[in-house]
Image (cartoon, rainbow, N blue to C red):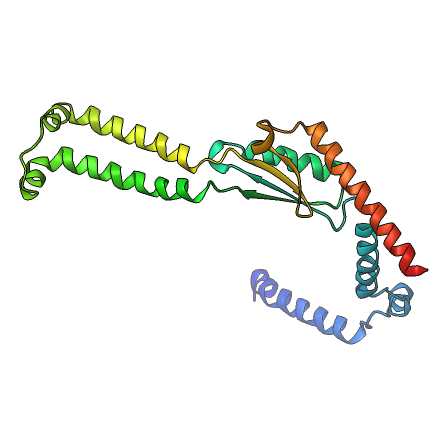
Length: 227
C-alpha cells in the first residue's frame, strides 16, 4: 500500500477517532450565574404599564381646555370653502386642545336642489334634439322650427355651450354660500347673516368666550352638587 492509499484510509479514521474522543471526554457546559440569576429577576408585566396609561389618559383629556365640547362648521362644499374650513379646524384644535371640530356640508334650499337635478335632463334633451331633431319633430307631429336649423348648423359649438352653461347653472343651484359655526349646537357665526367670513382671531375669541362661559357654568354646577 503506497503513501497515497495510507493517507486516504488513515485521515478518515483519524477524524472518526477524534469525534469519539471528544464525545466521551467533553462535559456539558455549566449554566452561568448570570443566566441563573435571570430566572429570579422580576420583570414587570406589560398589563400594569397599560393600566397606568389607561388611568392617566382620561385625566389628561379632562384637563384639556376644550374637552367635552364640539364645534361644528357647516360650509358650502361646492363653493370651494373646504380649504378655509380645514384651516379653521386646525387653528381651533391647536388653540383649544381636546375640542372636537366637525366639518359638514351645508346644503342649499330644497327648490334649488330640485332644479339642480333637472339641469342634466335639460342638457340631454338639447343634445338629443340637435343630433336627431329630424326624427323627433315629425314624431311629435310638427315640422322642425327655424332655430333648429341654426343650432344644427353649428352643432359642436351648440353642444359645447350647452354643456358649459348647464354646468355653471347646476353649480350655482347647488351652492349655498354658507359658512356657519356652531358651539355645542348653538350658533356662533353665520356667513349667511353677516355676508362675510370670520377671521381666525375673531373665531378664536368667539369660541374662547363660549368655552369660558361653559366652564364657569360647569364649575358652579359642580360646587352646588358638592355642597
